[in-house]
Image 1 (cartoon, rainbow, N blue to C red):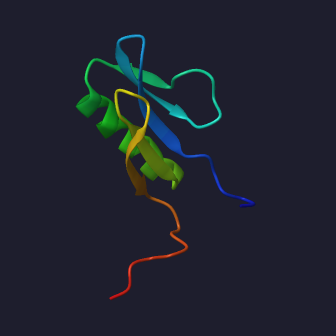
Image 2 (spheres, rainbow, N blue to C red):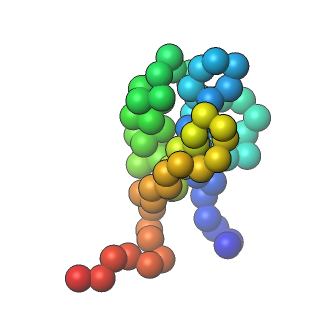
Image 3 (cartoon, helix red, strand yellow):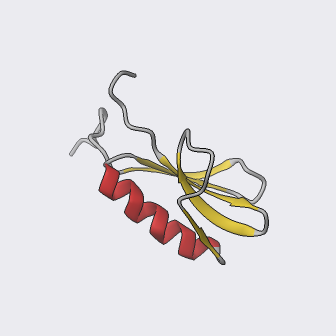
Length: 76
């Protein structure tokens, strides 16, 4: 999809919870708990107007939230 900004992902690596913009090799920030990392990751995604992916301990996607211009907004 052209023009779509990369999202922010919250993930676990080396015993810590981290956030990074997708496509970046290095973490933007590191946290001791998943909850702390999720709060910062959500803030980053809102600022960027992108998606926030929250991964589980095993690396699979556990949650996905969009803070951008949703092409399919809820009806109602």
